[in-house]
Image (tube, rainbow, N blue to C red; front, side, top):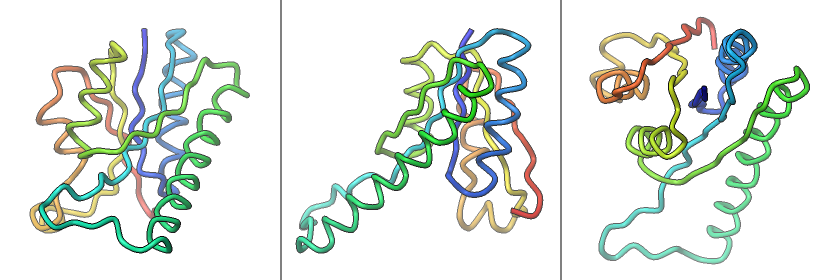
Length: 145
């Protein structure tokens, strides 16, 4: 069995990874910690910008990669088989595609519980996964993060 844990790297991500870790301990599942980073804009006229902007983006991706690695390392320290993944792309689509590629049997996501107005205006990553996934989805409620 394998579990795909989708994280946004907020402080809530550790709680989401811990919940997936508890399931993995019970089932012997492999755990994939996935963070989907923002894709590069692909509209006409987009220029990567000056070197300072490219450097800033590269530094941010390195920071995100270290954060995902730290979450996976914590699970490995608990005796689990955990792999960190950082992929750029549209969040919901990329997550579902990666779940398919990894032959995951469960997706674990967190929800900050912003409320209906926030979800309508901004959108909800968790809701998008729930609506479009053909796999079971475990939603870990996060309050106060």
